[in-house]
Image (cartoon, rainbow, N blue to C red; front, side):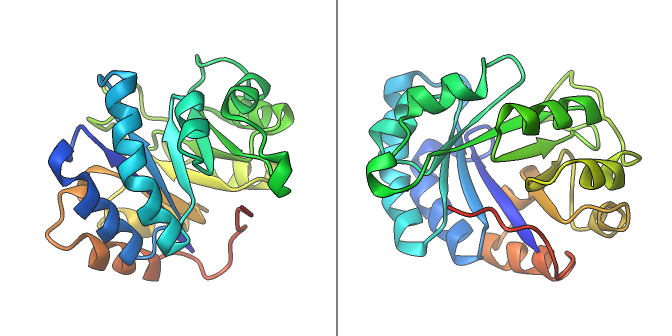
Length: 215
């Protein structure tokens, strides 16, 4: 029963990232990812440093999109990579393995098909994003994969699966009826008037049993 929040700079002004991160954590986000496409590494590092303590205080795992070295520099809990961003092992090594504190940094992978989802688990991903279920402006040009494989991917993949892509409060019941247990909601969430309340409303619509990602 969890909502993975992505703080996407495509929808949030840079000057609003701290307030937005606070609202996402207050609402009970399962994880918070910083996604800052089009920003240089220096800017992403600065933003990650601002968000990291908010997540730490709220005990919400903090994930950096695309930049394993920034995950390491800010002691983020993990990094999220796409299909074209290299191997899971490479991302984990670049992010640092944190063995001195008895844990390994989380590495998540975006997947767009059942085959990619199975491959990501076999490669050692800690969780996957699965989608986009619906066409979304967040991923322009990426075709929707639909809902048909949701139940099967949960049968074939044992790590946490976060369904993503065009999910809203209106279509969330259809997504959960198709078998989704955890979701990522981006545009409607970030553009809502009360982000924390939105997350709580979404969580009430999700199944009460799911596979928790250990951090």
